[in-house]
Length: 161
Figure (cartoon, rainbow, N blue to C red):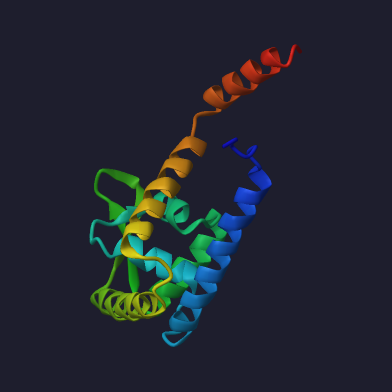
């Protein structure tokens, strides 16, 4: 059986559709807590208690720095997050959950997990396989610019350019 030619636009469409529909489903739960998807991502990262610099938080939440600053300001105003100076680098600020923030995260997290379990969009084995494939895809695209340039140059040579 011949393998179908790769269609990046089809895969990208499927990934985008799945992400948007999943986020929409989760948003209905988050709305009950007055929490956005972006705030949920931030609280989730900070729930490990380690404290994270703003660059790491922005990367995790898929937000540009100015947008993250506004979101963290709001979380600070709501007494869910606090900022502190990084003891390893006093020029940097770390964000951490307050006790109230941890309690809110636990409540929201339980509700989201319950919604996901009730909807059961994937069988456990399929969910594990999808998680593995998506992590592999993300790792592949997180290549260094030099690696991407070499790959493009190699394809150009193959095409006779």
